[in-house]
Amino acid sequence: MNLFQSEEHARRWPAFQARSEEGFIGLAESRHHMLDGDYLSTWYPRRAAERRTYLELSGKVSPFWLGTPDPGTA
Image (tube, rainbow, N blue to C red; front, side, top):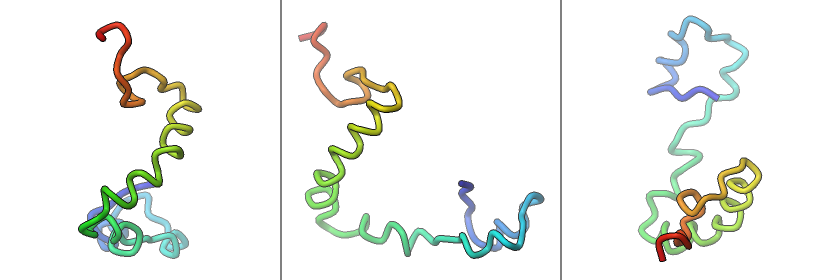
């Protein structure tokens, strides 16, 4: 995945391939719910289990990554 400022910016990228245009997804299309006034109270809790599973699968299990108190400092 590559992130670009705009579709025009992506098209100017030296490695751009025209067949990839169908893969353009604008932030307004994919992340518009993040602008909702209740985003944190509605969406964040729903994604908690998914985030934790991903972090554990990728080996990020320290309190820093999991957002849990560090037993060594309690």
